[in-house]
Length: 250
Image 1: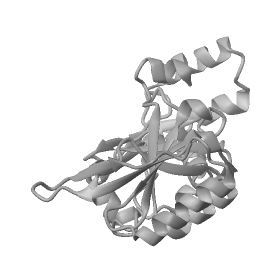
Image 2: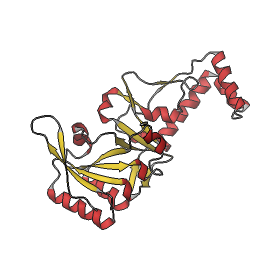
Image 3: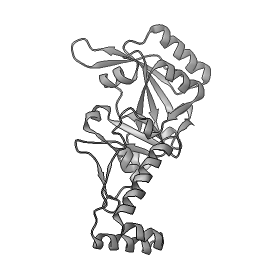
Image 4: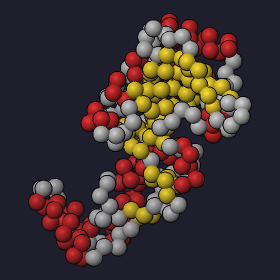
């Protein structure tokens, strides 16, 4: 993880927008929800066109590489020379992946007014700042989503990345404003995170003061000693948010 952060492949900090009800569950249990891709709100998400149109030369070369690495059987080889069978096999893998993978969604940025409106209870919720380096176990498999205006096509032999990675990284350009980073687990459900990885809670511009007080009390009670507080404010002259740091939790 350090290598990817140090070389700017991944940002050190990622952000999760949340409503207050979800926040309470996150804080009380120190867990993040990882959902099945089949449950995503975008029905196009993780849907792809499978291309099995390869030349015999391409297949021969690919099989030779597999043989050199001792990761191929005769039955496995036969599938690649049968486009229909390969299509059915890959299509089943896509469907299985959408049911058995677990994904938690984050953003690169905390200041997107659309994200606040859509995912943080119309600016009444929060945005959580996580430090990847403080909990590499929880955030072990992050993917930066790539946005495209063309429907994704996957060719098992020509595409370099694995099928699961391709599914999770590919999304319609209409969602580009999310600047999404996805963390993957082998299975959906709730996974624990280290409390010291939650380094900041940003309150929305419309978060009630009473809710801020309640959340701060929960943070203190549960021992989130590294978590600081920030409040968003409407700029007033531009379509943007300003952010004011509060007293730290330390």
